[in-house]
Every structure is written in C-alpha cells, then in structure tokens.
Image (tube, rainbow, N blue to C red; front, side):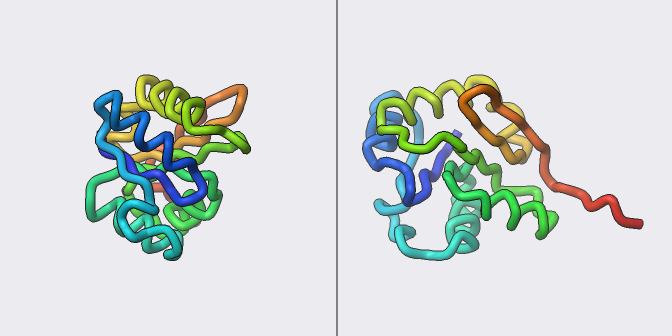
Length: 125
C-alpha cells in the first residue's frame, strides 16, 4: 500500500515507515506542504496513495463529493511523535488494509478504529 502523510504529521514517521518497507511520502517531501486539502487529496488519488492526516476536512470533502477515493486515515490523537505515529500506522494498515484498498474513510482514536466505506451516499430521495 502507498501512503501520503499530510503536513501536520511528523516527517520522521515517513522515514521510519520507509525503513520498514512501506511506500510512503510526506507532503513536505513532494511539494505539498502548503497546498489546500483538495490538492493533497488530488495528489493522493493521482498517485494511488492513502492519505493520512489530522484534518477532519479530508473526510468531509470526500463525503460531500461522493468520490470513491482516495482512502483517508484521520488520526484523532494529538501530539504523536514519529515512532508512535509509525507504529500506529502499521496497526491501522494491518487491521484495515482491505478496506483501504477498496476505498474507505478510517478514523483512529485512542480507543478505536472506525471504518466507513466510500463512496458516502446521501440519504436523500
């Protein structure tokens, strides 16, 4: 699985994940450090990467658009350092790899991992 870490996450996590064999880039490494959330999502979609972020806007943008991808993992745990984020990312990938491959919004808190499959359909008639 290919990953894109958003700018709010530690660059050191990308290096640690790469050292463990994960195909991952950090936004600051590929010219996405100061761009809009839409641009980050577009880059992830174009490159076939799952975006990992602290930002709730990624889930909102995908839900409102009805898009089937890219998959996004939202980390709702503040202050994670690189090693802790790398370990958490490995755990999420182990538990949710099939969901992420198909298209999913994953929310990670200290107590749970929730998965919602894409595309998000509205309940309207």
